[in-house]
Image 1 (cartoon, rainbow, N blue to C red):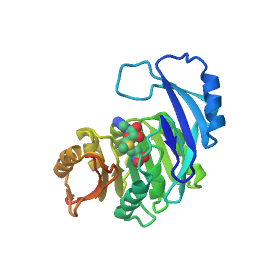
Image 2 (cartoon, protein in one colour):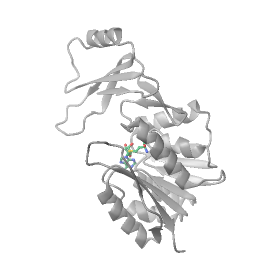
Image 3 (cartoon, helix red, strand yellow):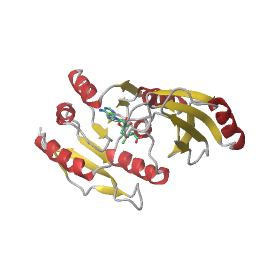
Amino acid sequence: MVRRGHYSGEVMVVLITRTKKLKGVAEISAKIQEQCPDVVSVQQNINPDQTNVILGKTTKVMRGRNYIQDQLNGLTFNISAQSFYQVNPVQTEKLYARAVELADLHGDETVIDAYCGIGTISLSLAKAAKKVYGVEIVPQAIEDAKENARLNKLDNLHFEVGTAEETMKKWADDGIKPAVIVVDPPRKGLTADFIEAAAKTAPQKIVYVSCNPATLVRDIERFGEQGYSVKRPLEPFDQFPQTTHVESVTVLERTEK
Ligand SMILES: C[S@@+](CC[C@H](N)C(=O)[O-])C[C@H]1O[C@@H](n2cnc3c(N)ncnc32)[C@H](O)[C@@H]1O
């Protein structure tokens, strides 16, 4: 797996192997770094599983750091091998800027960013909010998110490792009252439990960033049962040109209660 920072030019190379032992791995890693000066990180990831998931659970740094750094909309992000990062940085900047614009914050709101990854959307929101809560299932991504808040000198963020479903329920029980909830789930979308817990916190708006129109439509219907509706056209972003995939941003507004 190769990852390259669009603005920084920093490159990460991850050698994914089935077994722990890879003959000559130290020499191979050294050669990669010698011959490609932009490579700041060479890692080995071990994935013994018969699966369509690319990365396994164990990653070892062979040369350099365990992350690359890049920028999005003027914010700096550390990105490690296990963390999700959008593949189209040019469109991502437009997508995040629009999501933040649609959140329409004025500096005194509490916001939740569910499925926050390394905190890309959370940090973008934090500049205009009082407090941002982020939740993400991959521990390494949350470590990156916390470090990214420090790097960008933002101190109004709280990140937790966990499932969005369980954590949303906990935050609802704790009495957190967000003005806006941003969700950016994987293709399978949200669960009915998550939607119920989110609605319990009674946000004015849900900003739904989706990479799968089918689950988006299902979830809009479920939000409808909780008193939320779509009042403006959803906005597609050509995040994956020349493919059948489309990213989109939709705003759901509270119509009852
Ligand atoms: C489409 S990515 C969005 C990440 C981030 N918002 C961004 O734009 O970089 C979805 C994220 O949800 C995380 N994820 C998947 N299932 C989850 C769950 N049940 N609870 C919390 N996070 C989850 C993934 O690890 C991934 O980081």
